[in-house]
Image 1 (tube, rainbow, N blue to C red):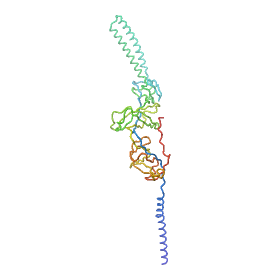
Image 2: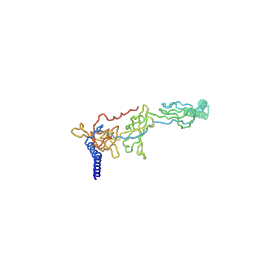
Image 3: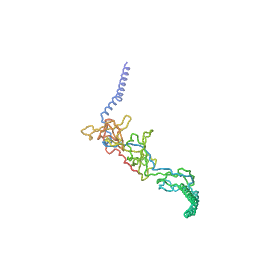
Length: 377
């Protein structure tokens, strides 16, 4: 019996020891750690800040468009023929009236010599009949026949010279040539494209504006365009034409602006972001774009507040999360239609690590600077 008693006592003591160790490690110790962590102050997160400002802004509208030459054509011939000479180089700038392509005109040149001979003979016959008519010894009918023959010979010469002119393809306006599409000795049909000719200065930009902004468009209005193909270079122009109808498929109106391009860097067909003013300036509250946190549940900003109003921003700080309604954006700033008052300090960098009422510290000179507007290269 004594052995059984001792065995039971030892078992109870071991069970109590195991239970005590388990309770300490899995109940008491985590609770102690939680209380210790809860009692520790949260470290302040470093953030960059900027003030909301009261500004006077003119509403702006953004659109997309494509550049178009003023004018731009595919040079072609009115008549068919064999290419005898190509008088230009690919990508060459040419003046108005410059010879581009000459088709074989040997047949027309032979006709011209024949017509000149007929014209010479007809002119001499006309001069004789004119002298006889003046002296009164020639019939009026003979004089009329000689005059008709002379005029017919002149018409034949003019027609041949016109055919020769049609086989000399000239530049109809000054511009830049593209890549040639014909070679010497090649037969080309009437109307076949030989080379592209584009006038690059000035240049048009066609863009679609929303129909609700149609009343804000007018000829002469300033337009700004950012050209992606030229590293985001920005150019300024003016609206020259507005379409007379709204496209029922897109509910937008076509507008055309003209831009100066003295360096001829902008090419027809290039894509551009268009921006233009739409209405009178208004008083608005603006903030840096990076201050707004966008989400499916609504947009918000973090407003920096002092813990102690008496100490202000010289004392401890925390953030307050506020829902906002955003409006127009221009450059690196955006309009806040509600939720923020002018002069309030907003977090512009570091929002991802913040929670409502989280302590923060302002780190000056750490915010990213916006890139300067790059001129046309």
